[in-house]
Length: 329
Image (cartoon, rainbow, N blue to C red; front, side):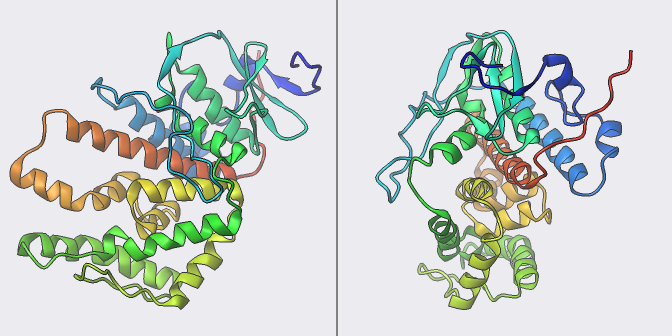
């Protein structure tokens, strides 16, 4: 129960550890296998996200970025970017169910957004995932590793003041400059690589959504039919506002609506989506070599962001609660 006397069904650390989506570690294969259908996929995506985050090598960190320094939105506000670091000021993390959804508690304090709104998420699974981010921080809180928290803050505060249709239109606009639609004519080896690697995902998208996309070697890019854009608008409209924030986040990471939908629709893995989005860069690395740490760091960071964004979309689309195991003495 919070200081303000809010009534809620508080779940203790012991209770959180008993959740089907555990909050201190990814679930084991046996645990993940107990749930069927979409929940098993979310469990696999959660494990993959944690594995990618754990796999990042101790490379030099980027300079801290202040909240509110992201791109300027149509409403005049700026999209949130994560803060740098600060000393950990709490001991325990828990979640509680309030009137507006699930809340995060740092000791006895309620987590707030940058605009001082109560941090409330629509599903228990997402709350557990965010609590995991906060609980996994050591002596120093590294906000730039907390992608789910950043996405939740953006969804709650909506700093760019966009409505649902504006989010959808912004996502679909990426089709006009989609990475996999821009091809080169030379060198011939790269042109062949693009054809072999990108054509299958474009063909999949055309069949999956019954649209025409194509590709082009022109600097102006392919001529995307208006009917194709409207089809994607209709498809994205089936997602809620929270999920759309995650979809746009994945698109901006991969620079591709097609790759993002392939990832979210479970057609390709995070590793495959990132590889396809960096195809030309990987070609240049194979030819000229890589910078000792920079390329590896960029690759790991991009995988982590794409995994977190995809996980966010699915957690926002799941049921509001998760099933819990009975505690046995």
